[in-house]
Length: 229
Image 1 (cartoon, helix red, strand yellow):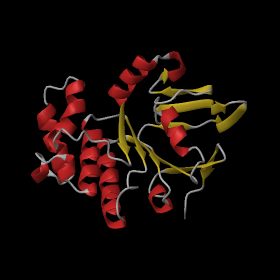
Image 2 (tube, rainbow, N blue to C red):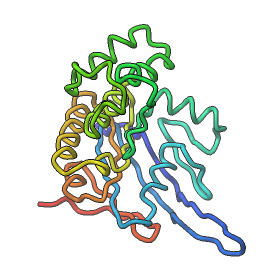
Image 3 (cartoon, rainbow, N blue to C red):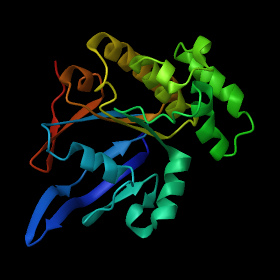
Image 4 (cartoon, rainbow, N blue to C red):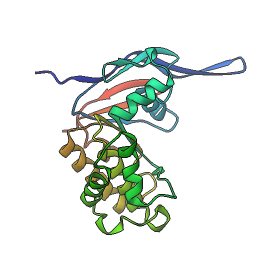
């Protein structure tokens, strides 16, 4: 039985205009991503990886074509409707962690749960922080945590809302190699346990090859790389 399509693009394009010049960042992207898949997007700097991720997640608006996210054509939604769709179905992990400095680790993970109306926000937040090995760091603020610990808080926050899709943009980019490897292991472990669809932007081919599929961006075009033997 075919897996349900969670993301589908149709001739997706993105361009920007500066004066009389028009720069095409993405050109005619057609891709489908199914429930439970892990997909890596790789390519050199400036190839359009992060731009594509933003379009797939509804953080940016396409110049041409459309994205269907969880059955909703994003072109038909306004900004508030796209935000509501993300809040219900999407999680994010960024290179820069994006934790709120005035909140503790526990409060950072609780926040999206509370915004979603969860009555068990604290219990769920504690459970996910325990899963990433931060049971003893619940009351610590981001400035009191190492980079690896901050990214683990970000992982717990992303998975706590049980998203259908998790977008990760260079999640190990600000971490040393050893810490980054531990974060990646936890990312895939949580992803497997939750059955979440993972869309991952990375420049590390070793990390990309852990995904079911690898898509390569080059000069605004998307190519499917063959699986390594």
